[in-house]
Image (cartoon, rainbow, N blue to C red):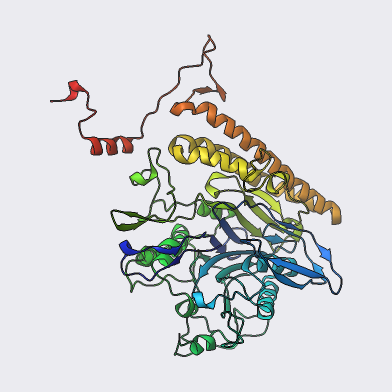
Length: 560
């Protein structure tokens, strides 16, 4: 989703964004970099105010002449229509029945390259490609063919495109709306992530130089690009060097302070968690030194990663780094040490401009997934989209199998929308709980974490047996089995989350803590309630109070 468009920097303190927009995060793990041979990718769909859920497009056959209307994903604006494919595949969330998964982040880039005459926006492009592709390479071909024919309506975009065997990152931009200047529609480049590497993108163009040193065999390419990707930059006066030295992001979306500190820093922390030697790229992530060594597109992890590792990375707040916003690192977290900061990202005090850190885990997430794609298993069991409908730190990822043919009720739009709360809707129930926890984080989060982790541990403990049982079936029975399991786990999750909400308000009422014994709240024998615990301020906040007030509240007997 859309990133912040920034002004060129003179100094950090003088930065302000030209406009505020949403921003997303994708991480990618090659099959030899994962613990079980899966290709893994993840996505936080970060969009304030957006009511989002688990999309579903059933498999279908279409007749010649059938047309598909295209509506912009962000605004629902009608853009036009395109012919339907003869056959489209089942899509649940961002994975299809062939285990193809697509995510995205918006980097914006040069504003003059946006094509307001295009018919295909980035969101529609994702779901059309998922409906029409059996592999990641097919998805790339579908996506690039569509935008070349119909025009690309959105700003600069980075796509994660994966299947059980390959992981790709693709970057795309329009060529402006004025066809009298150029008849070209898009520039794009797609790079295959080496199998033993991890990669990521977070609203900053990540592809630099990409030209292979020798010609690659058809069907075995590790880099694909539009014919005009270099020539268009030359035509516009943005590049004069050789093809071999051409950098996509330097020409079309050069990283500024925001692109590094607010965006690339999230990728740096993913690398930093699981790869050695990342301290050398702290100056790049900090965004301060103009000549800092750029961070590579991918790195080799120091161990093979699991789905759980990627889920942990999606819940990150820069813990243990120079950018840490957790556990009372500064007063910005409030009394109860919230590892979140209110938006906007930039704010002004006494005429000076400041910024907040932007970690991967953010309160603006509408939904999140970690996709697991396994080549050695039949598709019905091999593709599992671990899904949550709020900030990943605040939800339990539930398993959604790629053959699922109906949305779980709680992950649908049934009975709810962006202003209609429903106790049966995961978006609203999970946001309800999160918004209780955020302002009293250190007090309430341990209760949420216990429930979240308990559910996820059970999902993973059951996974092998569940899949083995499903694979004993065939055809429609297998699909029905995995669909029913997907819906069952979602139903159980939302029931548990409602229970958690009730538990939190009873236990933590009025900033006190009601005691529990064997999982039950204690009552007094008179029915007036047990004596509550009064935790008061966290230690760090006590010290901040004293720093601000001196001896104003010092007890008289303590005064000298």
